[in-house]
Image (tube, rainbow, N blue to C red; front, side):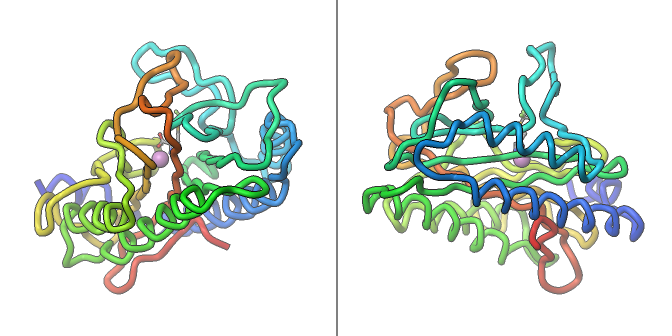
Amino acid sequence: MTQNLYKLVKTPEQIKIMREGGKILAGMLSEIEGMIKPGVAIYDLEDKFIQMCTANKVRPSCKGYAPYFLTPFPTGLCVSVNSQCVHSYPRKGTFLKSGDIITVDTVIEHKGLMVDSSFAKAVGDVDLNGMSLIDTSRQALVAAINMAVPSSRIGDVSNAMYKTAKSKGFDVLRDYAGHGIGKTMHENPEIPCIGKANDGPELIPGLTICIEALTCEGKPQVDNVDEWETKMHDGKRFAQFEHTVLITENEPEILTTL
Ligand code: MF3
Ligand code: CO
């Protein structure tokens, strides 16, 4: 189990490129975060993102992404509002309103290597449970990242995420997971949001993994609306934070941060 992960260890040159890409992505997401306000056209976030990709000479990797004969993903950003869930996409003619919870998730390719990150944000005034959902998702990601050290197994990372969500009365998705990343958007290992401590493959220095805190307010069951858009089955809300993280000999290094 552990052995095949050695093939995924990045070279120092690849790590340097992913560090650069991570900083570019963090800068772009922080611009987009600054645009989020009641009344904003959701598609303006997409337009801004595509402009910034051009300016930074990076490729918006989600746009046109088409695994297993799916319809190519329509946009550069994944945007989910309230009960919308993973890889939903922005539509023209829709607007943010006070009380919404928005998640923005995206991947860019810089010099042949990808980085992936997401954040959730309150639009205007959000109720207490909604604020707690966002906070908890952020904390669940932090707790998971803190376990991303060479002595850990993937189950330790997943378990820390799950326990954090549960301790605040929330849950995590079961049908989707984090993943390794590099020349392709999704590579091994899979990083589930729920797992057993001391279980699964051991993390090794040089791995680059996307840890995704896919946090939900109610039950974790997800429905497909179309090939890409998903919704929480119970209509309750969803909030996601994600970082691309480098496993090192010491502390984990978050690549998708400023
Ligand atoms: N974080 C998401 C993922 O890992 C971002 C890509 S979704 C895409 O699946 F399908 F739109 F590309
Ligand atoms: Co991802």
